[in-house]
Image (cartoon, rainbow, N blue to C red):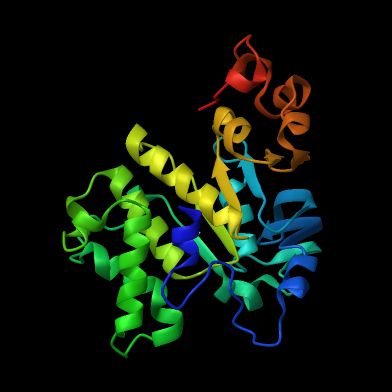
Amino acid sequence: MTEAMRRLPGDTFGKSNTATETATEKAAVPVVVFDEATVAYDQVPVLTNVHGTIEVGRAVAVIGPHGAGKSILIKTILGMVPVASGSVTVLGRPPAQARRQIAYVPQAGTLDAEFPVTVTQVVLTGRYRWIGWVRRPTFTDRAVASHALRIVGLTDRARDRFTTLSVGQRQRVLLARAIAQRPRLLLLDEPFDRVDALSQQALLATLTAMRSDGTSVVISSHDLALAHLTCDDTCLLNRRQFGFGPTAVTLTQENLRAVYGRTALEPQDDSAVAVR
């Protein structure tokens, strides 16, 4: 899988758009740095005290209950929500300036179910940063899209309408679109919500391969088991940060009780708990 991904036509994951930026320089710059960041809407703080670093090739779970600020954190990384105090830098720059090197995978269920596009057309939207919105995709663009679909195991559905796919298959198509963008940072919002087991395995395998090629991954979720199984680090939130670091160290019973409350946790080992 990894070798096949390295052979993506005309692309590699994490490939810089700046010719003067060397691989050594990219590796030396943290992907995301939060420095006591506070995010506010209409001057009312909605997420406070976020502090931590995301390094190259690491997977970070953003964990917390519904309404904890997970999506807000992702929007902050994308530069869609301003920082009221402290700072957030992405690839050494303000978030909005790094957006071209970030891929975002929303929940498949949030998309318009009636939008009449094929699977390939959805994946090709990941190439628009290069081809623009008025030019036609080139042979290379189509080859990249085809390769991305092969990686997620959906080559046979390339000409199907996106709306005819299952939720899990749609999520895999959105990940293929992200692959076509050749990002240095991949953000996923609840990627396994309502996803079947087969699609979940395909998603996890693809994320592992992308990470091995240097792409950093941030996964917003409320599933603690997912964090334990797939992520190096965890950012634990509930309107403010309760922990940011190695998953085994961050997802302690003490921290989880502080975030979810004592009644929200089943009396079992942390690694087996999934709060929904």
